[in-house]
Every structure is written in structure tokens, then in C-alpha cells.
Image (cartoon, rainbow, N blue to C red; front, side, top):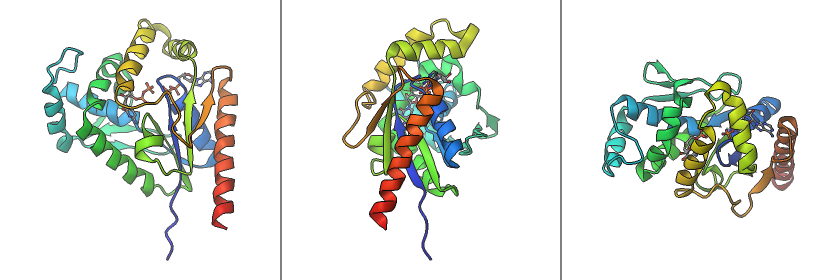
Length: 236
Ligand SMILES: Nc1ncnc2c1ncn2[C@@H]1O[C@H](COP(=O)(O)OP(=O)(O)O)[C@@H](O)[C@H]1O
Ligand SMILES: Nc1ccn([C@@H]2O[C@H](COP(=O)(O)OP(=O)(O)O)[C@@H](O)[C@H]2O)c(=O)n1
């Protein structure tokens, strides 16, 4: 019996570059699964805050050890159907709660802990390989470099900081105050842990600054189609 492995597409990029919305739309079009890895870091930050940890910028350095202690009780679940992405921690549905500004402000503190990254990387790999669809688009910050460096298609989705802030602000509507400053702060903090601004060797950059949403999805699906055609040629 041969086991068919899913076709893996890795997508990285800074906050607001369109990773989740574009990856989801591309996955729908291709009949692929979709994995939002940022949701796991957000859910762990939510769990840490719910457990009473101080994750503010001036939190004591030993909060890292307290975060690591939470890992065994972190009962995380996420769907990979692009039409139905639900996130749970234990019995709690946290799909919306993990997008709250309080979680966005705390998440980089959790994401910089090496034990957290190692544990979540393992989890992402097991979710990725378990999909029953022919492929999966996995998006985050270190997917092209750490989680799936051997993926046959790896994309860095970028856009100018100005475009990213304008999009995030439009998306948040009345709740947009401070969104620009918060996005810049988070990119600066996350950028100390992984480089998601420069494409690693073999990674294709899609810059969406001058593209509308549909054009960006077309560009990403185009890169995936080329990668699938090449893989078919090299295995036949
Ligand atoms: N090329 C684009 N043109 C206009 N808006 C876009 C484009 N790509 C994404 N968006 C919008 O920008 C916002 C941020 O995108 P999102 O997918 O949440 O980014 P990320 O997951 O990288 O943080 C969303 O409202 C999305 O619909
Ligand atoms: N592969 C990943 C994905 C997210 N993250 C962390 O998780 C946070 C939330 O990721 P996200 O993808 O939901 O962020 P946005 O969609 O808001 O840009 C990031 O700010 C990083 O701190 C990470 O460290 N590595």
C-alpha cells in the first residue's frame, strides 16, 4: 500500500500581508486544507492570560518558564477546512477571543519561547500530514524555513507596511484605533525571533502592495500550480 502525502504549500509573511485571507481563498479554489499556525500561538497566549500570567512587555523574564509549564494542559484544537476554521482550548471555543487586541499584544511574548516553538512545530507537522485533502496550505512566520522547509511550494507574501496597516485598519472598523502601532510593535518583536521579511533560498515572493485581493489569490494559486506541474514532471 502506498501512502499519498498531501501536497504542502508553505506561506510566510508579516502581519496584515494577507496570509490568512489569501491562503484560505486559494485553499478553497484548489480543494486543499488550510492551517493557520498563528492561531495556536494566539490560543496559547489566551490560555496563559486566562491562567493569570502577566504577559505585558515588562513581565518578568521567568514568565517564559511559567508559559512552558502550561504546555501539558494546553488542549488545542483547530479545524483545517477553509470554510470552517474553529479554534478550541479545552471546552472553550476561542475562535473570536484570540483575535482580541489584548491577545495580539501578548502573543509575541509567548512566541519567543523556544520550547513553545518546538512543541507547536511538532503539532503543525502532525496536523499537516493528517489531512485527507490532496494538499494543505500552511501559513505563519517560519513555515518556509522551520516547519516545512522541504515543502514543494514556499511563498513569502509581502506588502508595504503602509498597505498592511491600511488593510488591517479597514478590517477592524470602529475598533481600529491603535491598530497601526500595534502591528508595527508586533512585527518588530516577532522579527527578532524569525526572519519573515526576506525570502529564504528557493522561496517565491508575492508582493501584493499593488494587487487587489483577487489578483493576489490568482498570483498565489499561479505559484502553486507551477509547483504542482514541476513536481509531477520530476516524479514521472
Ligand atoms: N491584496 C489585497 N488587497 C486588499 N486587501 C487585502 C489583500 N490581501 C488581504 N487583504 C485584506 O487585508 C486584511 C488583512 O489580511 P489577513 O489575511 O488577515 O492578513 P494576515 O493573515 O497576513 O495578518 C484582510 O481584511 C484581507 O481581506
Ligand atoms: N508560524 C508562526 C505563526 C505565528 N507566530 C506568532 O503568532 C502571532 C499571531 O500570528 P497571526 O498569523 O495570527 O498574525 P496576524 O494574522 O495578525 O498577522 C504572531 O504575531 C507571532 O508572534 C509565530 O511566531 N510563528
